[in-house]
Length: 122
Image 1 (cartoon, rainbow, N blue to C red):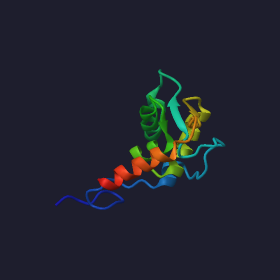
Image 2: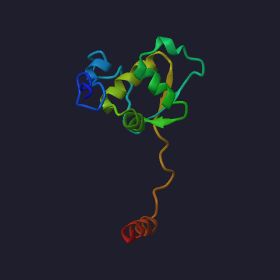
Image 3: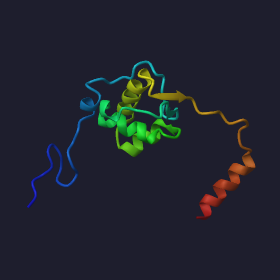
Image 4: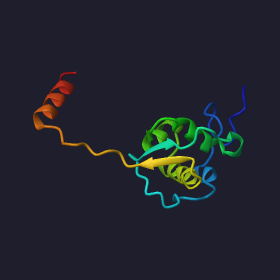
């Protein structure tokens, strides 16, 4: 029988507490990020050896624009942890951020109703 994974339940792998990943920090460095902010890698040449594993994982995801919420979901990390890690990458110039583009015009009610009706038929 295999021994339980260190610090976690059997079969779930090692458990790393969020405060360990962020070095005890709970707030990002003044980034103003929200869950729909878009982030994208700013550099194509990165010294991967100099990065913490979580920073490297984020940069791999950010090769194309991606939302903070998507980074959190794909890495299975709490949003607050992702924001702290992104704050590190922003301050080093490794990623750029921007607010998502607002919709030019809100959708018409008849279109929204048609979508809702279609969903209900499923």
